[in-house]
Image (cartoon, rainbow, N blue to C red; front, side, top):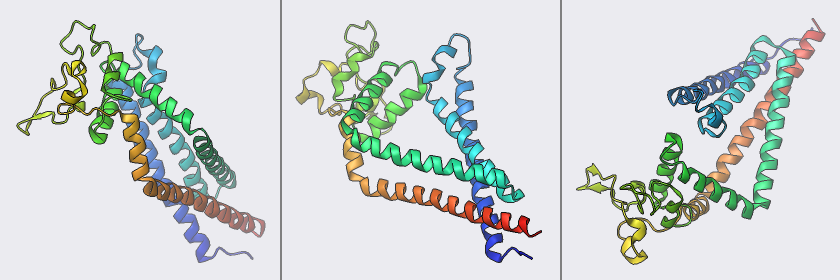
Length: 261
C-alpha cells in the first residue's frame, strides 16, 4: 500500500502556504486597484470611456490573475485536487514561457522599445494635470531620476497648461519635480519654482531645473542596476520553476496514492 512520505507532506503544505501568501498579496493588489478606480469615480458615465487607459486597471488585472492562479494552487494542494494542480502547473508554465519570450522580444527590439517609452512618457505628460495616477508616476520618475520631460525640459510644451500659448500662470513652465531645489529654506515646497523655465536658455535654466530628459535617466538607471535586475529576474523565474516542480511532484504522489487506495 502506497504511503505518503514526510517529503510529500512537506511539499504539500509548503506549496499551500506559498500560494496562500501570494493569494493574499493578489487580493491586496486587486483591492488597491479597485479602490483607486472607485475613488477617482472611473466608473462614472462621463469617465467610463477612458477607463481602458487608467493605470489602476493594471493593478486590478494583475491582482485578479495573481489571486486566481495562486488560489488554484492553494486549494489544489490542500484538497489534493489533481485537476486544480494540473491547471496551476500549466498556467505557471505558460507564464514562464511568456516571460522568456517577452525578454527575448524586448532585447531584440531595443530601439522600438525606446520609441514606445517616449510615446508613453509624452502621453503621460499631456494628461499630467488631469490624471492623478499619471501625475504621481511622472513626479516620481522626475524627482528620483533628477530629470525633466521625455528628452529635455522643453517637452513640457506638449501639455496645454505648460504650453507657452496658455493664458494661465503655468504657461512656459515645468512641474516642481523638475526643479533642482523645490524646497524654499529646506522646508516649504515651492510648487511655482518651475514657472517660466521654458523661456530660459540652458545655461540659466541648469541652476533652476534639471535639463536632461527622463528617457536618458531611465537608460542610465537600468545600466547602473542591471546586475540587480538580472538577479531579481533569475530569482523570480527560479521560484516559478520550483513551484512547477513541487506541484508536479505532489501531483504524482497524489495519483499514486489514489491508485493504490
